[in-house]
Image 1 (cartoon, rainbow, N blue to C red):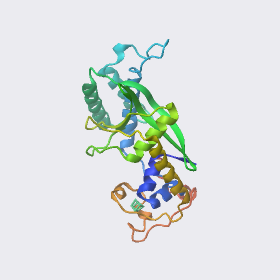
Image 2: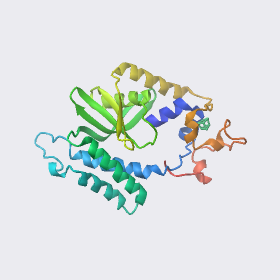
Image 3: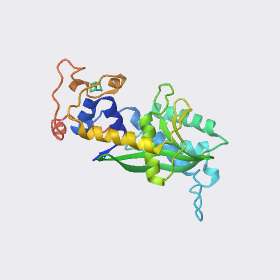
Length: 262
Ligand code: SF4
């Protein structure tokens, strides 16, 4: 069975929410910010391809002149003009402002991307843990994994679990250990960095969590700050007076309980 970092984090916070989402198959509600997030990730991905070092014998994907603010904004415009998944006017305006700030912050000292939108997978107990890096840069003393965040909230240090998963994923993909993991907050134009290079400890923590998930039988609810973003409060015995009965996998969709993929 495949698991993502989000699934591990969900289990860590609340077993009941994990059970509803991943065992019963109840989908999450679509988030309005998801469209913006996809467009910004996509624009940054295309832009950084132009900064990637050509492999020996290859030409750069874009000539150096193409690495400009206009190029970066034109990638976002491509998403705005997309007829099947267009951005709203305000999402487009905000996206342009965020990318313009990103450009100003990095002007004159562009990163050297090593990996862009690269998938990884590794074994965690009985599960196959899968994920994707937004970006990994070459830095003077090694590699830095970067994760773009679109959250409004103030800067938070990277979740140690995410640090473990990314570090293990990077090692599974390249055989190397990253020096740093950074969250880049696009709305704030700032980065928070953590360091963790103990691969053995990271593997032990993630595998222990995988084993706990496979052994869990009760899936009790656990209240916390994460309840604020929980889509399943109407099923939750600690939140709803008369909780809705939990539907089995497939049955949920059959009965029309389907919010679409989040
Ligand atoms: S509302 Fe809170 S306690 Fe209830 S399922 Fe959701 S996350 Fe768990």
